[in-house]
Length: 205
Image (tube, rainbow, N blue to C red; front, side, top):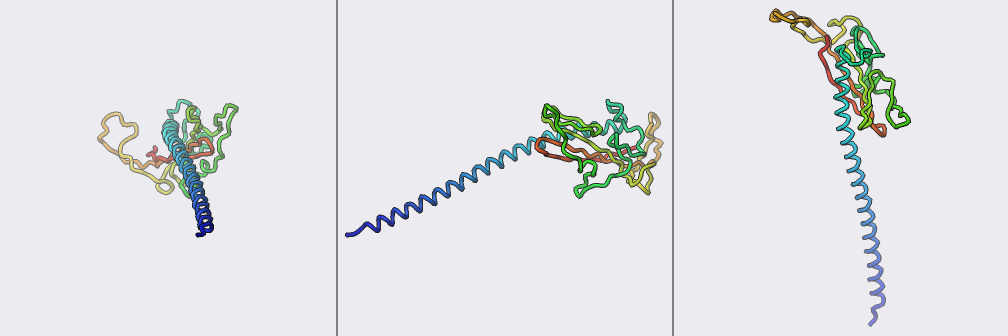
């Protein structure tokens, strides 16, 4: 009884099964590496966004203080709201924006440079760095108007203000005034050229 060819066939079949198993293990290994890498990326993105959210809040606060003329750095306060003032990150007329609604002066900024200690630096007015996350925050304030000068219905988006701004007493005698809306855009730059934006709208005066 001859069994040699059958055994050789079985050995050949075993080799094919072993090779297929090896390929499956290699593919599974790559899938595992990819899964771990995706998990790490998701974790890094989450940490960046959490820090960016906190830094955006601080940037909004800085911008509001500057607009309300209450910034601790007096030179950043917007004393004239009817003129464009790039040195204060303030524009009395709305800037051109990209498809995402981000003003081009912010959207087209280069990534901040790093000093010898690896801390981001920038000459953007009002720029600040969070030492813990090493994220840089920068803001831009725009009056929603198509032109500088006094805000009018012809060139600005206005809202109705019903009480005198300096009302201290007897405020029931309402008056109507139309004032411009203001938009604040914040840009957060993080490690590895990561960038996040946030916007808010204010009722200006």
